[in-house]
Image (spheres, rainbow, N blue to C red):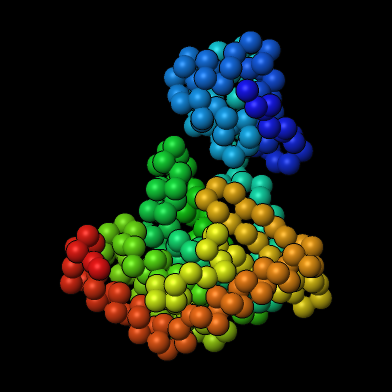
Length: 282
């Protein structure tokens, strides 16, 4: 049996919660599978809670607190974890984002949060975090919309986005929501300091197939890179590593369609959405 992964309670509040959960479970003499069976939830969820990759819903936290005899300690800590709609790793990125003079993004799966409509954001969050309550999703949507104020400041950062063609073809939330979202992207691309390109399927394989990447540039500080995949993110500050990720982005950028052709492809995707049901699209 492989040794359990080491936990770092200082990494985030979610990691601290996970460390506490593991200590209580081990003290009770239960495996993750045994604890999951008592809740009941899949043991893989228990593993994600302990690793700090996921925070349990309120009702699951209460069951864990009771089962493990935590006397409210686990639930008290849960309250601190859930106080913010953003996990620690995302908050760290947003601190850098707010100070950046330029943002270069390759988005593999979705429109970047800074350009999302409220309806699209709600659907992306609902699909990506199905354990959240309706109220929790609404909190996250409101926080995401508030982030977009960054583009309405007196000196907004330059924003250059490369969207994988999959982003504009997948009808997230249905045709109407997706059409509105694509129209928002087209409109945003007309603003000064905003460029949008599409990396077409015809480009084939490319250097950023592992996931989305953002490069942040600053007026008086070195560039940093941010790698995002699902429910985790990694901020890269080592200059050599940032240079490598910048090179990966440049290769993707070079294979993307020019802005005008990209806009035309997005508008074509909108017309296809209006004309067909999602599953008729080819």
